[in-house]
Length: 427
Image 1 (spheres, rainbow, N blue to C red):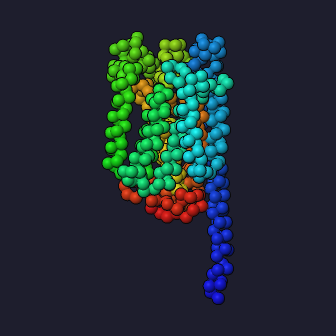
Image 2 (cartoon, rainbow, N blue to C red):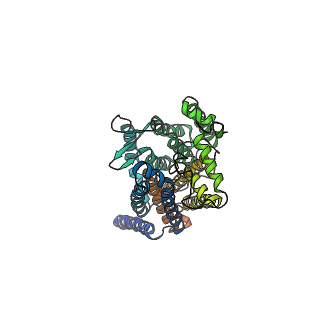
Image 3 (tube, rainbow, N blue to C red):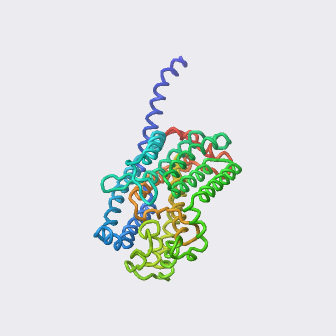
């Protein structure tokens, strides 16, 4: 009789488990809609709004000179804000676990697109590089989108492989995939995006539980590869040669960096006033894109630059907090990777403008002109908001840990890999 009762009850138990998982998944989706981190959202919206103001200020002279329209670049940036805002809204409301099954197809599609953009008469060439598609009035740069795709793919890979990240074979496989993506982008002569993907990939590998000596070896290999890429390409070697003293050739290869320092210095403490920059009148190349931080320093002074840096530090804190509170390992890796992406780009851009590191052509997130980069960053922020929302609506018992330099960080939430409602355990 006991056996018969047990047999009869099993379907009911399974049905109850299915309903429970569905209820938890519904709760996750509701959390994504109602539990968004207001502070994170505020700082992102603030940076985007400030970026629109600075793009108009830095580009009005160039827009009038080139296109007879002072608002030309501002209007195109608005398109990026609109598309990115829509993408952010969708990803903030969509359960981030759905990205798991999209990771492989998205990476495969990205590899194909990165190859196609190199085909003559299909990809658009500018400044000696071929890495854009012209879609009507918009110029789309696939390498700018590849960072977001890489983060999703690597987060899924590390979550799915688990302990493989702690083995040399696992690290080797990871690096092969990363090197393929980075290699395609380097062929397009986009060193900046390559550096960002390699750096974010390294951060994710560390969060995924890789051993310290494997990470040290990988850093050494990346450093050697980076040095070779600079030394054997003439224009990159020239940049490095004039890095320490850009004004030694103030009218040649050091012109841009030297003018950026002049802009920052002329701003003083409070700046010359919004819209009153002199350098934007074609004295500083790329004033509205890669070197917009110099215009911020000139117009708003040291105070303005400190406020911008403070906003990025605040964003980093909220991102790290979201990663630590994520309900599962996949979410923790996603949040950590997205936060690293934005912060690394901001650090490299500011470092290049201030002369701390050589110029690499990386925009200042949310602020520099560039619709593709802005839209991709906003989509990333939507995913981060979703992870943060679900983490805030779960108790500590279901939160995943990321690796604490050691020890079995990869096993912190094995059960949660298969969905929002899977059972979990404390690390």
